[in-house]
Length: 154
Image 1: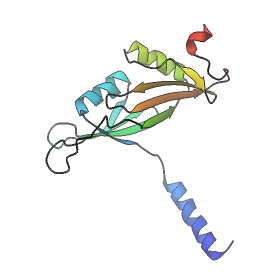
Image 2: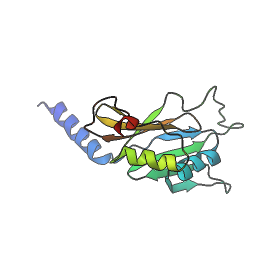
Image 3: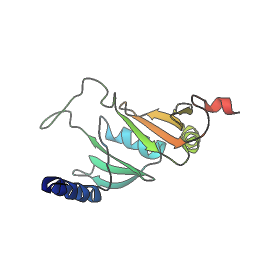
Image 4: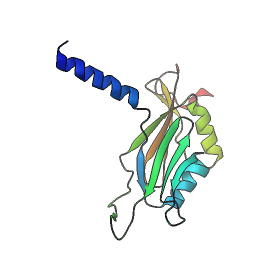
């Protein structure tokens, strides 16, 4: 290994050791509605928040080992942004779980519209779509044959 490669390997090892978690940062159109959906509907808890005027403007939410941040974008004034479509369209977040079927049952019991679990890539997969169009997938390993739906297991 030449000198430059040794330095690159050392830098890379330091970066790898330093990175602890990736946390998606989602801009939402209505913080109150999103907090209700994520906390009451999906069961997330709030770890951090920013309330410059007594209203939550930014927060860090957690569910088990997963996390995400939400921030409502200003619709007027400095740094305003009015999206041309749902802000989450085309964005998917995949949560790796111990038991996606248990997550599905819990979501249904809370009145959340979740897709029927189906096996894909050796994973049970169920999904929800939040009020801004972000798709959240909950997945867990399985040996059940590909494309099997939960309703076919009974």
